[in-house]
Length: 183
Image (tube, rainbow, N blue to C red; front, side, top):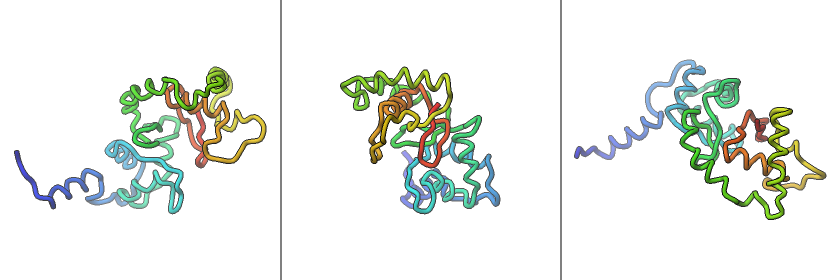
């Protein structure tokens, strides 16, 4: 068994995270694509103090890059990334999607959004029909009556969309700010 010093271990860890070495003079789409593949997951968060949280890890590693490249990789016509629940909501290489199918199956068990009166369960087919017939939609499209304030105050349609996302039957086509658009 070979031993390495603590200093060498730190250098290896920093290098493995893409935080060492030279930054490209003008980072482009290929740099963004390659880096997201190396990182494996870029956490998404709605925190927006400096910039949206998912832009910052790439900024730290590439320097000044065009965030539109990451947007295109995540939500463009032919994305190389998909959005799903890893340790948190993350952008991950599409090739990793099969690794999360066990979790998608696990979410099919009765759980907190399948409320006892069957409202959400009844909305699932209605939501799937809507997506098939009319295309991408946000959770607000199913709002009935006055929407109550609050992050988690979901109507049955939004809860059905979230369930379908978690089980892998729909995905996030794009975002409008922090609002999800499912398809």
